[in-house]
Amino acid sequence: MLEAIRRRSRFCARTKSCISWVCDQRHGHRIACYVLYHMLRGIDTNEVIEAIRSTEPRQIALAALFVAAGYFTLTFYDLFAVRAIGRTDVPYRVNALAAFTSYSIGHNVGASVFTGGAVRYRIYRPGA
Image (tube, rainbow, N blue to C red; front, side, top):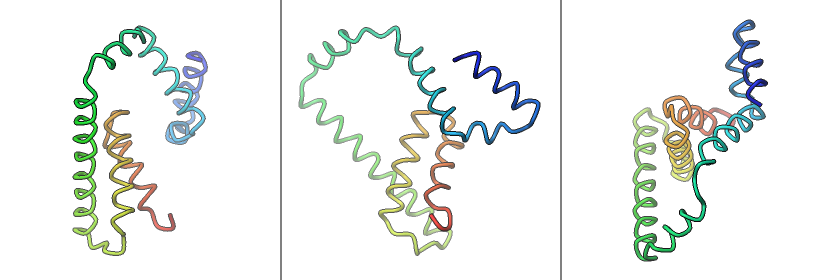
């Protein structure tokens, strides 16, 4: 797997087609699975399960509530931004979808300027 990624990156360097390679979903999934496997292989699942079981259900529910509230407030950030540029034709549900997906993907994948921006572009682009 790693050798295939190296070959593809060398090809991109020669042909200047890295953007199309990065956007190719097949390679994105492969890279994500590879990275995820190597990040998680040292984690003991029994320890994780024990930590979850030792946490009170009330604390987990409260944490989930605060996470939901945080993402809910972030939807208004996108709503105000879209309204500020004069796009009153975009409904709140589209703003909420764009905000939730772009923030959750951007903050978890990293490079949120690029990943979050790409998600927003895909949702807000004309004809979408």
